[in-house]
Amino acid sequence: MNFNLQNLRTIMEKSGIDKDYYSIYPDENFLSETVIFIRKQADKWEIGTEDRCVYHDIKQFNTEAEACQAFLERYYPEVLNEKKCL
Image 1 (cartoon, rainbow, N blue to C red):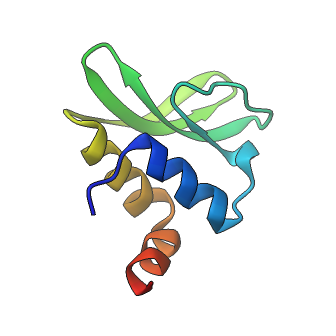
Image 2 (tube, rainbow, N blue to C red):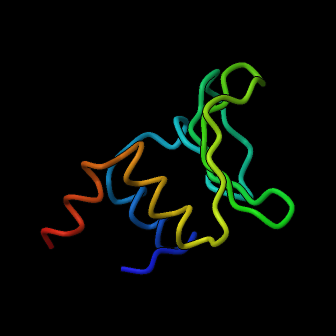
């Protein structure tokens, strides 16, 4: 499946994972001290974690689809596996 931000949001909403624990671009209104994010930064897409305004373990991708796929594979593989079983 070729992922994009719109279907990534839908997958995450249906998964039941609390929205406070992740951020999908352009949303940056999160309440938790630690959050997993996907964002566009200049001409690249990035995934990683933010802990108290410090970014960690950032991986860059050339396309939105690659970043969305990596976001699910890295942080929520159980959600991706459920999607494949449908």
